[in-house]
Length: 210
Image (tube, rainbow, N blue to C red; front, side, top):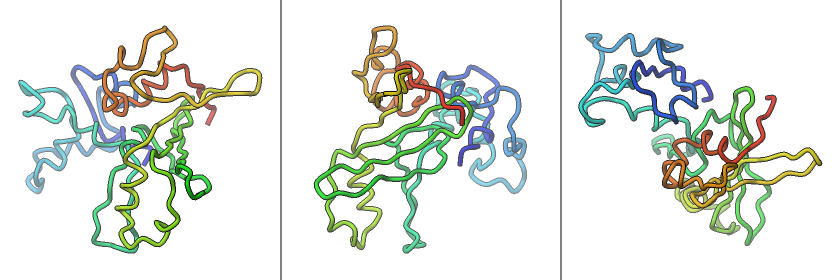
């Protein structure tokens, strides 16, 4: 759901990832945080939307709560009791859906997704595991998702003036426009995923006009 940052507010020190994705500094779009402390609140279900660092460490507040949002979630509509699975390898941003390319035996699966906000980017994810036609009839559909959607490479698109372009890998060793690497700027692959859009900025991806 592309409007998810509007549920969160951070009135203190903002992380680069939260700032870039659009977490508000003064008030939320939907006001769920205003219900914190309500008599019917259970397990901090509303307090968690205020991600302001307020405790001595992250253990004592919800400063990292927003990091768990912004991912494609796979569900199995044929198993209503099955829990959905976040496919974090596909990146963290304001996903406007996700679609996959043609399935060809022996070739990787490719998933495409756009960031639903003005002047944002187009992404693709390529699985490490090549497609096995037998998986089309798997009875454990979420396990099939694990097989293809947990391990792979996330890319962001760059379009050039000559009508060509390139897919830029969002990996720690990827070169940024200032001659450094994403590892130099952000750290590990997990850090890159959390700040997918910031990583795309650093690589010089092409903003889209939506």
